[in-house]
Image (cartoon, rainbow, N blue to C red; front, top):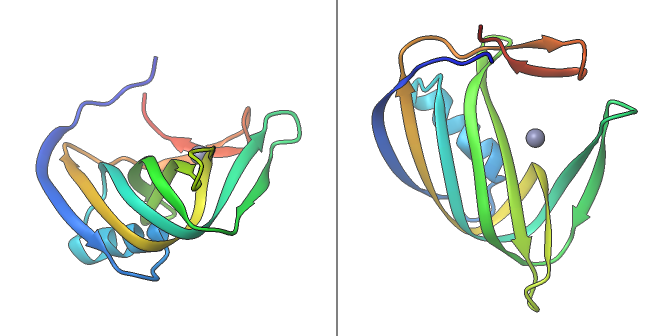
Length: 142
Ligand code: ZN
């Protein structure tokens, strides 16, 4: 079971910009603050989003378009390094006006309002490397 030990460096509470893409916003936050390993959660609301479902046989994402306002019922993610740059991996559960949900890998989420709680980690490099069995870039940990 590959694992790595990291300690908590600091907690950051950040309000994402209105009309920003949540994934891009967290990526730029990591770039500006020099964050190379972190876990985060976010709550709030999105104007629209693009979610993904990874087809495990075809080894490719199926895109799920969410083109109306939704609550971010839950969003969790992490930051690691891919190709030398901070890379955000996030999943979200989005709820519509009736409480019905759509969920998956978060490719893009245009922010109406969102609060991000980011836990920066220290203790080494957390890098992604290509993994042949999944055709994904996974954490390169031993
Ligand atoms: Zn994912």
